Image (cartoon, rainbow, N blue to C red; front, side, top):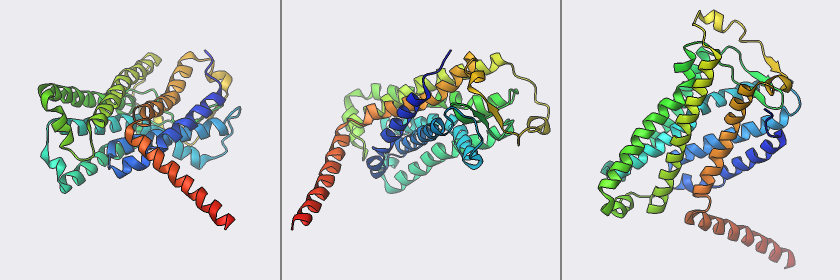
Length: 317
C-alpha cells in the first residue's frame, strides 16, 4: 500500500493551518474557549506535520534534534488534545441546555474558562507525562514523514497512551446524549434557552453540536481501531523502567522503503496526519462560511481596501 504523494500532504496541511488561523480572532473575542483550543491544537498539528513533510521529504537526517523533541511532545499531546477540546464544547453545550444560570455571571464565565483550560491544556500535558513512562526512544525519524513518537508495545501502554482518546470520547458522548435529551424535553423553549446565554445564538449552537458530534463519531472508532492494531501487534509484559528506556537516547532512522511496505504502518501513520487535516477542514466547513465569518471577512476586506486607498491618495497628493 503506497501513501499519497508527500507534496500533496504539504499543500493540504498548510491549507488546514490557515483554515484554523483565520477564525481565531473572532472566536477569541467571543471567548469561545473550547473552539479556540480546538483551532489552536489542530492548527499547530497541521503546521508541524507540514514542516515535517518539507524538511524530511526524501531524507531521514537527524538535522534538528531540539525541534524533533518539541514536535514529538506535541504529537503526544494531540493524542488527547482534540478529544479534550470536543469535551469542552460538549460540556458547554450541556450547561446551556440545562439552563445553568451560573454561566451568565462574570464569576461563572471566568470559572468556565478556567475549567475549559484545565481540560483542553491540562489533559494533553498529563498525556505527555504519562506517555514518557512507555516511551522507548526520544523519537524516530521516518523518511518522507519526519519525527514521530515511539511508544513501546507493553501492556501499560494501553492505559497510559492508547486508551485516552476513547476514554475522553466516551465522556463527551455522555454529555452529548444528555444535551440532546434536555433539548428534546424543552424543544418548545429552544430559542429562549439558547438566547439566554451571551455569545451563543441558535445557529452557532447547532454548528457547535454538529462539530462536537462528528468529533465523537470519529474519535471513538478511530481510537478503538488504533487499540486493535496495537493489540494485534502483540503486547509484552512490563519488565522495568530500565528495560523500557535502555535505548532512549538512540535515534532510529527508518528509510521509506521499509515503513511504506508495511501496510499497518502506512495506515496508522497516514491516518494520524491526515486526520488533523480533516479536523481543520471540518471546522472551517462549520464556521468559515457562517454569518459572523462573512461579516468579519467584509470588515477585513474594507480595512485592507481603506489602507490601499489611503496610500494611493497619499502618493498622488
